Amino acid sequence: MPGNLRIKIKKIKESAILPHYAHDGDAGVDLYSTEDYVLKPGQRVLVSTGLSMAILKGYEGQVRPKSGLALKHGITTCNSPGTIDSGYRGEMGVIAINHGAEEFKIEKGTKIAQMIFNKVEKAEFEEVEEIDNTKRGEKGFGSTGLN
Image (cartoon, rainbow, N blue to C red):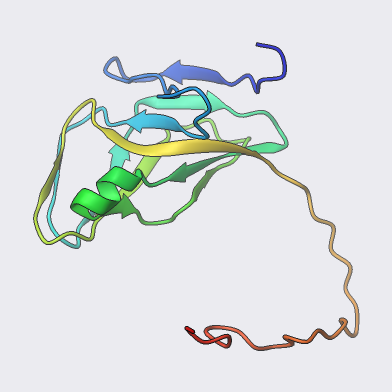
């Protein structure tokens, strides 16, 4: 389709499932496990997707948790969002962690995360002696309170 971001993707494991959008209008594509895992509470594992892709320069792929897995089982991604850079050509993995109270079985073919593609701006840095002040200033980490 014209105007869509075209991504070249390669299956590096026979059991890999190509990512796809579940519904028209979805922001993320589902990523699937190619292996079976058992995650004990508090344990993390690098889940194989069996895929590598060529993301165009100027874009990134962000690996994010699946909300259903997080709500129902406490399964999320450790580094959320995880970034797949445009220059990376290795296998995409998902660092999954079990924050739930029970062990969780990830079976081959299970949706484990989602990926969203974003345009990335390149920053140029200018070293200065001073930066402008704002009303917030250096206040951070809870400075606005909870109410």
